[in-house]
Image (cartoon, rainbow, N blue to C red; front, top):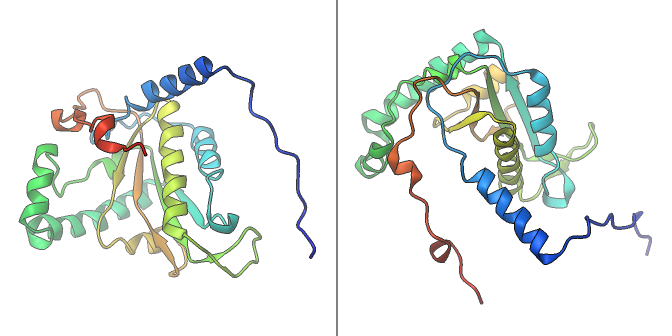
Length: 224
């Protein structure tokens, strides 16, 4: 049976257990300061920073290494305005009854509503699209596997990189969001997953106290 080419494992740096713990703690201390920002300034962010963050996201693991994602990075004021109009229309329906009372009650401590000015103000919007078919090569038409899981991992790495770059972020998920295919000029078979708002926090940005509540280690883990 013919085997695909194999390359030698590229070893990680030699570290002591104490050094590994220090690195893990340092990563936690960095990531624990990330907050969802809902008030952005229009201060510019260089495209090169966004490119590096997307490259980092592209290193995420994926089913069969098919990398079933596409990231549409949006800087155009016209495109951002179109996204805001469509998103706010969906949000008005959401907050006027589509969501249901339980969901709206859960959102109340965050103080969100149907108005989404940050979609126009922030310098960048990034829309990840999930691809049901594709593969590594440009002309591949292969079935992709574990698509949602793979794109979710890539988005987590994208958020972590943007945070490490000192940028504020917000995940916005209007529902439905198929209008993003039209605005971003992506094929109908691709599924938009979310809008990632990227930029700098406005001078008057605030954090809901509720957002600082995080579950303890005992609540989010079990040891067997």
